[in-house]
Every structure is written in structure tokens, then in C-alpha cells.
Amino acid sequence: QIGDIKAKKIPYDEIKKNIEMNPVRCADLEAAKEMEELILAKKSQGDSVGGIVETIATNIPVGLGEPVFERLDGDLARILMNIGAVKGVEIGMGFGVVDKAASQINDEYYIEDNTIKTKTNNSGGIVGGMSNGMPIISRIAIKPTPSISKCQNTIDIESMENKKIEIKGRHDPCICPRVTVVAESSTAIVLADHMIRSGFIHPSNLDG
Image: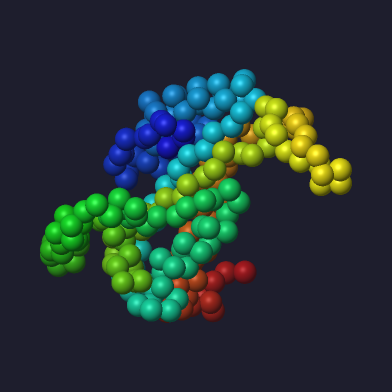
């Protein structure tokens, strides 16, 4: 999402291909065009716009994380909140769970081809601090770039007077496209760390 323009849900197998087809890295190609137009409009107005960046990690083994300390979702939230301009993090449905009953959001388990799966993924692939094998889905809220050329009110701390400020130079009207790869890399770091701790990856087998 950028501004009030939201992407519709796209099948997992199309997402990776689609995000490389537009500069805003949005899997919904129709929404991507509207997002580009919005960003350019904000730029022409000397303003900026924020949005939401979603990261999806697939083929995750079951059991990464801990139930109390070193929770997988806790570590993921921590690294994502340390990305510049991030003002909020949610896993799975996130804040969308607050007005729902447990019967509406519980991910029911079933067995298919001798594999345990869930019918839904409202938990975002993490239950009780540990991965359950479903895709891990996180979303981060990105604030609009504060450095804009529009005139704004500020203060002069030396003279203790109210002032006006108009920032010059090149500033991104939206940093969401840049944040996508940062969020992806940050997620990979946390998952790799937990896979080493859980024995899925052994440091001695790594190249370099």
C-alpha cells in the first residue's frame, strides 16, 4: 500500500515475478501504476507519502523460535522496527484481530499428503513464538519522508524564535520501494539466525 492505494491479494507464485516489473515493487500491477502516479503527484507538490511494505517468507521449517524468550515474531518485530521510517509492525492479521472472535481467526489444522497444514494463515506463519511451516507474513508501516520542499513551521533554538523552513535538494517522495529490499534482507537475517540455532543450518557447512 502507498497512501490510500492498496494492492489486491496476488497468488504467491506470481508475486516474485510481478514485483520486478515496476519501480514500486508492487505485485498488483494495476495498483502499481496508480502508486507511481501518486508518488509523482506528491513530488510535484513538494510533499511525500508513506505506505505499508509486506514481506512473505516461504518454505520455512517448523519449530524456529522459542515459546517465551527469543520468540521468532519478537526477533522479527525488533529488526523491522529498527529500519528507518518504520512506525509499526504486524505479523499475519496483526491489528486486524482486535475485532474478531477466536473462532474467526484460529488457523485450523488438517493433513494433506502426509503433511500438516492450516486452512488459513491468519497467524502469519508464527504461533506461540515459533514457526508453524506456513508462509511468514509481516507488514511494516512506513511514514512519509519528513524532508520535503514544502514550507513548514519550525524553531530556531539559538534565538528561541519561531521560524519557517523550506528544505532544498533531492529527497525521495516515497521510500517504500527502497524499504522493500531492506525488509526482505532483515527478515532473512532473523530466519537464518534461528535456523542456525535450531540446527537446520550448520556454520561449518557454509561457503566462504
